[in-house]
Image (tube, rainbow, N blue to C red; front, side):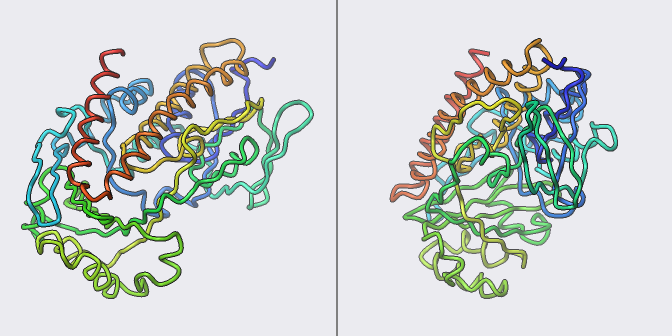
Length: 391
């Protein structure tokens, strides 16, 4: 068995999971290589804001030795939560959020930059999109990338998201459409350009849901509010022209028709949004997804347990997965056995979270969605408190 300090470790994917794993391994004397298909860190937008949970995401930050950096970057003031019905009636207004201020917000792009800046130069190889992954007789795996480069590694970690190229070697499961599509909108400089919307959303997130539709508005950094219009539609709705996505004006017009019976202050989230509009179909792996262990390969994050965003667990679990794996690889002499044991814990933990996320997305777009959202978020707070009490 190869000693852990001489292990050749490849991490496929430079998101929160892959970078967290690389960072913690490096602080413990083990060097991994991160392969990311994007050409650079700013090639594409990284998504909205995340609330890092004390029992998962924040644990990973602490293990990575980045607590001070995180505290300097996180937005502790943006943890509020509001729930409205479609008439704009405010049902819940909790300025500290449902977890009493224990889940500070951080933009995804800021979190990624924090992790990247903590790694030595050259550890992340940009512009490396995996083409093939083949097992060798000695138990290692040969990676070939679309840029023509090839290399062998003792352990390949698939941290490459929903449509992982590593997962098919371990599992036949594929993500399934949840029945829900988000249309992502955004408003810039909200406090000066959209003051009424800024006041309505407050410091944190606003949820308004009813009868198969929903609007979620989230405070991001630098005066930006990200909005998701949520719709229960068929999987082919976007391609079949459910809304004309050829220009922003037509998207706004189509969404306003779909939400025509909603209150004008909520419709302003659509009417006043900017021209960058992106449809996002929501997929999830089957609840309880597991795979037969195979030496030299493993999965983290969405590659292992893709779930709906209702539950707020995805990135948090991904970072906890990564930090647990880093500890397993560096604290046990038999690294292969440590990976096997880690996978059992990961899958068991993810099953509970995935079930909650599946229930959450169903409740959010039910007939009594606003009340369902409140109950779901309240349960999240209870679960968080229980997890902290056991920690």
